[in-house]
Length: 66
Image 1 (cartoon, rainbow, N blue to C red):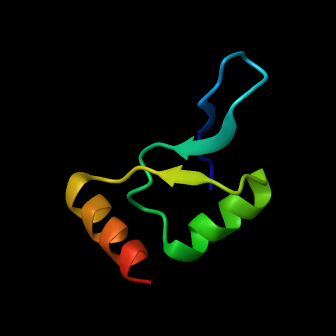
Image 2 (spheres, one colour; image 1 turned 30 degrees about the vertical axis):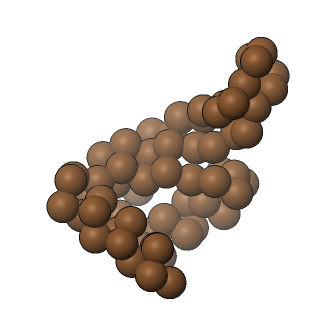
C-alpha cells in the first residue's frame, strides 16, 4: 500500500518549532488497523486521517466516546 503523508507543525513560531503531527489525505480505504500501523511507522504521537465527511464524523464520535 502506498500513501502520502504530510507533516504539520501546529502552534509554531518558526519552521523548527511547534507541535508536529502527520496528516494522511484520502484515507477512506484505510482500516483502523491500517491507521495504527501507519502511525507506528511514521512515529508521530498525533495523526490525522482525512476521510469523506460522513466517515469522518462517525470516526470522531467513536474516538470521543472511547
